[in-house]
Image 1 (cartoon, protein in one colour):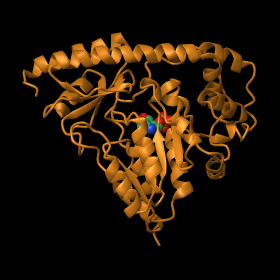
Image 2 (tube, helix red, strand yellow):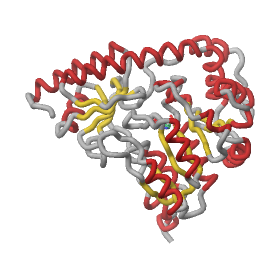
Image 3 (cartoon, helix red, strand yellow):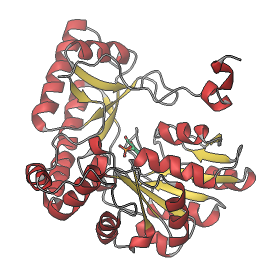
Length: 363
Ligand SMILES: Cc1ncc(COP(=O)(O)O)c(C=O)c1O
């Protein structure tokens, strides 16, 4: 017997999440949807942790303090919070909690690809309800119909949606929660750049789960902390399914520190990004690119048939943007993270240079 014969069907079938490869360490990255600056409380945190760092021991497996702080921010009870090692792990926990092999889940492409990947890894079966042409609105009637006819276990809604930056009205989300027979997961990782949340619907509906991550609002993507918000029964199940100690001590403490001491810093950085989003969008329009109105910290920009070439030329200059131009529903598009004014202007200058070099007309 060869060891290759032991791979599971899933291991044989799955292709991993695609990151850009061959990126120089000093590259300017507009492809990660992260904030440009680490939290302002970071130096103080390191000073404190230097003298109080029991990492020879295990972390508190309940993450009680962090749970309490998160619950306070979200205005829910601590028994409605399950802390996970990133938003991505939260998706894995959801799939593990709900799927028997072959159970259906629904996504609304183009959306965050990890919903599909993590659910396929956990033996879920993919059903799609594509966003509507041009507006990228959800087709909520189709979602509700499929939820019933195909016995969908989990519906993933992304609000704001990655990669389009578009949003779903809260009353549309409520209609889907109310009329579908599914668990509805609302990914609110980019909530702060939009300002609206479905959390208040948890009081009314037991089939709602909200997904969150410190990567975006907390500017600590590197330490990998996320969480799920749901009714206490579901939360208990997530707590049973997740790894007992998936989140490391340092990650946990930094997440606590950010919530305790950096709320003003976070708000400032988020407000700056919202302002820059408008400016950057205007700059792209001036160049002649079509920009979708965005409620997140990134823009979906339609460049047209030269998109791949322009991404390649920018990469040669050490600038990385997310090429989505060959993806279904996103033909000719790139996704660009909004960063600081200085970085954004650097990008615009580089794009203009590339266009001049190419002397090509862009759609
Ligand atoms: C929509 C969405 N959800 C979840 C995540 C996962 O975030 P993380 O795994 O960094 O917590 C991301 C990351 O880009 C995302 O775009």
